[in-house]
Image (cartoon, rainbow, N blue to C red):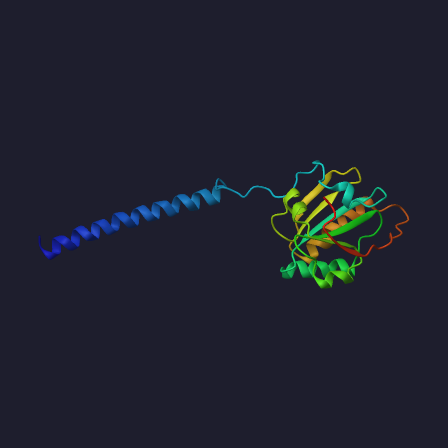
Amino acid sequence: MSFQTSALILSWIAILLLALVVSGLVRQVHALTSGTAGRPGSVGLRPGAPAPGFRDLAPPSPATLVLLFLDSGCATCEQLLDEVAERAPRGDVALRVLYRNAAPAGAADVPVTVLGEQAELFDRYDAIATPFAVVVDATGRVRRSEPVGSRSALRHLLDGVDQVDQPSGGAPGPAVHQIQSGGAR
């Protein structure tokens, strides 16, 4: 076999392989644009589901409960903790900040209940990524369950809860301050 024949055969093989690769890429682009590609499943509990550990987490009086799942190694979580410190919920809303492991030292300055060592609740609420928020109504049912990736997203979530639960007259409720480990199970 001559050099020219060998080069021609190798060229045709390379062209066929390239055609297969291009057709695979075209199929993938088509699947992504038509929305048939697999999407990640939803995270968190579905609205209406009973809230795990509600009795241990809920305030003594009937109120809406906002659970904020944070991680001590997360920069966004630190920003959200600062947001909570600047603006504790008002009215008939209670906020609990939960950490999978020990709560960081900076959490001691936040005017809401902070609970460390809550890995079991992270699992039960399906909070696979932080920061994550769950809104629970006074009856112990999940109203919302979603990731909150910025201070403005947390503000929007708390504003929505405040608007629904703000009693007429709108006097802010007292702030609670404590750090616990273990606890709510």
